[in-house]
Amino acid sequence: MQEKCIMQKIVWGVGIYSVILTVSLVGGCFCWIQVVRGKLIITDRTKLFEAIKKGRLLIVANHPTLLETVILQLLMFPRKLVHPRRYFIWCVPSASLFRSWWGRWLYKSARCVEINRNDKCSRRRALRSISAKLKSGETVLVHGEAGRTNGKLADSPLINLNGRYMREMLFPAARIARIAEADVLPVWFEIPFWENKNDFKQALWYWIRSGEVITIHIGDVLKSTDNLTQENIQTAIMDA
Image (cartoon, rainbow, N blue to C red):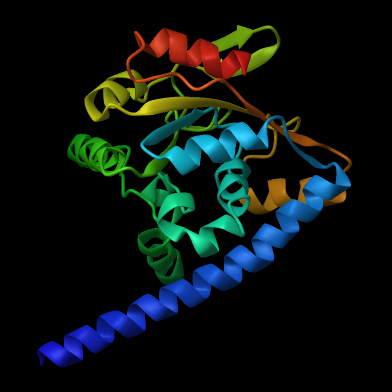
């Protein structure tokens, strides 16, 4: 019985890695082709990869659409194939986005920290899980707005800084970084069509067909020993 369980886990693990390998290969190549075409710009990719390589990193970004989390994950190709634990970064999407059976499988397999944003207990468990992963040297990507900038559930005030719009940060990034003694990397996703393309497929197809350029601005790393506050993290994101 025990050997059967072990074999099932091995088969499950091989299956997950095969799917991740396929998705990473196809999606990663697609994203890097967009970089070559000039449709996807990363302002300082060396800083991004060096910070992730070091580990124990909390990436905090704005959340204009549903594209940016996927794009950042795919840009880890091919590094994640060689060092999956280091470059396969964790993210925190809402469980409500993965309602189909394959969506739930993907949610549990693709390094997603499970969270139900309408459940206080679920939010607490997610924060504890994020803190534990950071302490173990992992990299976690969170969106400080705890929802899309123009999403239906966005209920925090909209801030305008030099023409950049972002909701007031709800995710306690400063507190989590201090508890886990993790560095913070502020990232600004500049997506011109953020105001009217909330659906993932709609945004993806629009980006492919249009001449719009997505720019990923990488800010300076904020050390865990700095006097981190919600305000200075949000300012660093919007100034990246």
